Length: 594
Image (cartoon, rainbow, N blue to C red; front, side, top):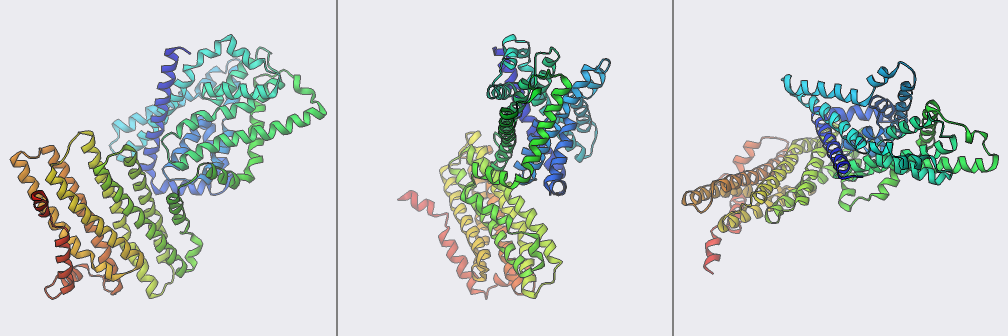
């Protein structure tokens, strides 16, 4: 490989990854929960998944592209790994259609048909439609559809670039001879793996074998092991696509490799064991383009039929190979709590919902802690983790919201109804805690990238408010965990103090700006940070108030707040005074004097 070939290959990889990201983000924005529901219905049984994968791959003519899309779906949480396995198996069947289409090019006068059905033509048509939607249609949904189409086209162009970069190898006599010189099945399988790993396309590899078969130099004994190895080699671009994905994305990419690996091992052991006994007479049969396409299709269909009953075993294997941390296992367990079969038993469903809500609250609190730590010690890895956990918190809201709405249609007693109402009232506030964690992380990133720092006094003041916010979040989560109204009553005094502190610090920072102790660009970041901290305390207040008022069976937030802040409410006044002493920003002056 020369430098130009390597650069071309790398540019193809870059386009491939960017296209996948653009397409996945667009799909998520357009469809949201609707796509998740559609995918669930289309893949809720293995057979449906296989059919969907086969049809999609037959259309786009690339099992790698189909699997890359599925990796994106699983990575974004729109599909489960178990659903993806069936689609990937179907994709392995669908990709064999390309071999039959390529057979058209060997029929005189049909080159135009084959060209019309090529991936290049399909990609071009999709790109043209996408850019029209993006530039000339005003409706936002069509803009996002344009992103999906452009992402798909860029992905396909990237794959073509990767294949094109190594296309000169097809003309290499040494490279071509390597395909036809292997009489040993193991050597033939290895040749098929390496050959396809380099070309980055099973369809391209099959096409080259078909082209070589026209010369009459390929027999069945040579074609079969190479065909078996091609599927394994085609997993390279899929594994490449899992770079930067979460663990479920990596598991899905691994399924593609294991599917073809198991098929190769099973059928090679069976076929060559039987051949050793009966000596098949067709081993020396000369292969042509049609027979190559046929052997490829039969092998892939046979592999799918053998592995289809073992989908659950394959799922367990990839989860064993790519293990979850203890925290990730807890998150998965939370979603498994929300089983539809429990809806017939409201007492169980309410209890399960509370456990899942506790998981959501726990993740929201942890993400806020991560974002506040990021203000002190920035790390791109930690920033990315915060974004991933924010997506997880959004998923909690979607799953719990849907489950709780279904639960409201069931016959429940008074206590169960109050619990469900509390969950529905507090769900969005816990989700907003996650949003503000992401915003705070964004401020930390801005400060780091622009090499900005707050003054020493501003840092001290922010630190005091952050400590107060951490306490109010801790109080809120603990109150929710334990259904403890006494703890919930401690939230409002601290929320009021945080509001006062944030207003005071904004005024102090304006004074520092006027005297030149701080610069304007720092002022914007400081103000954004305080706004997010104040909003976190406001959402904590919403949660605590909802708990107290719903327990009293009279949800009147304003009445409750007026009551606890009244002159006669001694508990509120005492609690506020304690917080005021604990979070006294004037201590900075005393510390400086010491």
